[in-house]
Figure 1 (cartoon, rainbow, N blue to C red):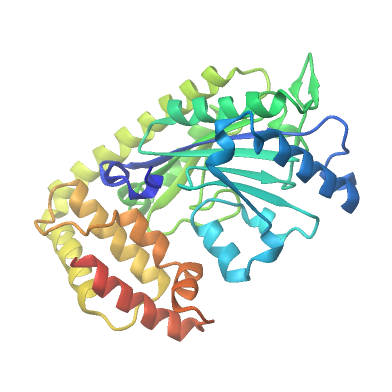
Figure 2: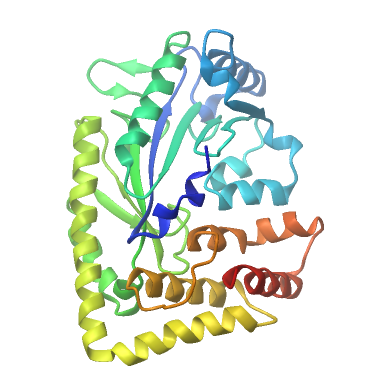
Length: 343
């Protein structure tokens, strides 16, 4: 199976991908702030054993990774692929990562909670994400007792995750709402529905290339179905506003928009240096151009979002096989874009 970001569907509309994350804690161990090194190591072994054993077909699909044995650039690349969180990378307790071969499922052990199950799907297929996460959750729970309260649900390190322990989200491309400043006006209204819009890597991160994450904030008192339905409803509303703004702006500034899209394509096809911000902004223009059927040029063999991932610092350093300073990254990024955009 191909990785989610290699699927053509990630470039078909505003929604790039869907994600479901389940937070779980093992009942017999203290929560992360009180977890000793010995307990952390034991928890990793127990959780890993629950999935990686002979009775489950999942074991053949996963590999076990110790983040401490990987370089900083490797871990940064994992963050750029949305495999691990930035918080997971910073921790110094024993940790573990169970990673499906196609990168569509990852399980972080000893992040903020003992177990974080994450599933990713291309486009808006959040139902498939939930079904995969739920199967893995049930399998682990066959041999591991989770911290659970009959009144409150699953108990988590952060009170906002108590209940289902579920965060559902879409990664979404909102270039026109961003450019016109209308996105900021939407945030208060969206927040009233228990939904938040954050940067490309979630909480505390900034947007790049008009890419945002939209996710639920409340899990207590709601079922998984309620969370997904609420997220889909709000996301559809945001997309309607994005599409309306695209039509409005194109009616007023159609030639300028088309010019910006073709200029972005030309710059990336021929430039010798490109900073991350300017490259992401121009890729955003190109993605918009293909979405609106304005860019009458062959699409790259890779999805625009995959290209966005592969121009990030961790990917460039990994590909070079050596450390690169910012100037060297700008050169490597431009070379990669020249080779990729027109092929």
